[in-house]
Length: 254
Image (cartoon, rainbow, N blue to C red):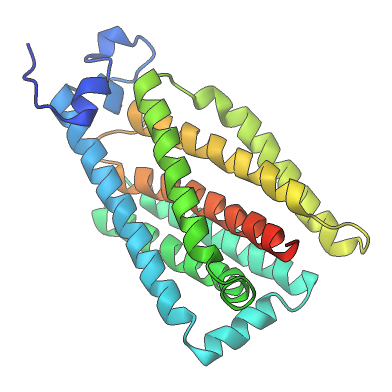
């Protein structure tokens, strides 16, 4: 019988062995003893919290640098430059995720996480710069809403114990459609992506957080906490981005 530690993860995390989940890999988190699972969850969420703190500190610095403010305006200067910026960001993110999934080097994993945080901080700078100038208090409000939504989704994932990896197909289609609309809006003058697009993206990001949290419970190995935290941080950042846009849109209509 396993000891009761009183920890949140101990009480809600099941199954206890791989035999309770016939689809679990013998190397996955779900197949490990309770103490190993709890340790993995702790490391993952500590790395996630650290990533969020570093991201916030980087943004606080970048927003005060005149050269970065000018670069942000160049990034948002035209639809073409913004598409180029997105392309560079997507390529960098792909490299960062590959590094974070490394099975041979912890240093490479941390390099991937660090690269991703820097990429997120840079891509967010134009949006946060605009929000700080034209919509006072929006960034703080968006951060609170994002963290509250993430906490709620995390609670659902851990208490239902369900494997939400079946949402992968929905998310792939959703992100491809979203990317197609962004590209189309960049070239078609009359097409604008307004409030309802941002709302749809908040839904998509919330589903991604649910899937990523489920993956933390069921699919990563216990040595992949850096990659697990990166995946969840990416989805939370996406949610934060579109919550900001919704609040800015609502404040401009007041």
